[in-house]
Image 1: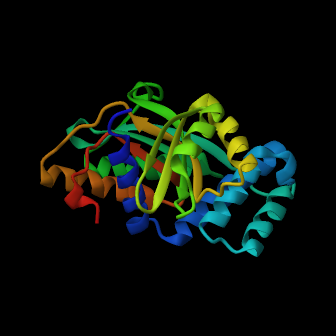
Image 2: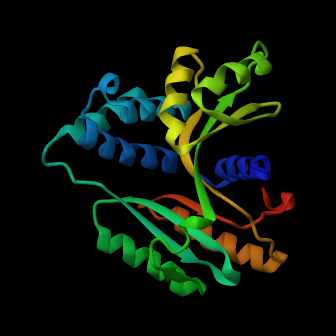
Length: 245
């Protein structure tokens, strides 16, 4: 899994710079609506909802805000949220995998198409680009001085740990898609709190562009991420260190 360290740092730095707290809240609240519809409003009996509660705590979402979302999603008359994905090409052949949560599919399709047309990208048939990414569980844990990372790594292997990255501020864990739930349970048993626990699409390889082309692709990604229905944009663009801020 070479290149993951750079990828995770880019995602984290970019998230801190671009993803306003309100956008984080919006993403979690929409996912809560889907989770409650699928598994009910009790986090103890709904693993997906329990994970979202944990993520909400990690981004300091007020408890009242989260509870209102859970109660609203329990209402039979609440809008039904759908998970819809798009596979697109930005200019210069950069692949984009876009995940959305929407209560109006026609609106979301129109918005994504408008951005791609305006910025010179194309929308591709679903399934045509998915092979360029591998879906992984990614767990971000704030690093504490008392943590023994070597011992943690050994213990987490039983939870499906594939790779662990450690820097001054964070510990990042990677698992295979099918081991995501096992790692969630393992971390709960070890009483380790995550700042975030997500399924991400990691590019199998990345592509480098010149500075001007990189800025153009990043502009498209920013426009997509600003759309209320978009929750994730994954890509295979190699972003130089001096672009992180």
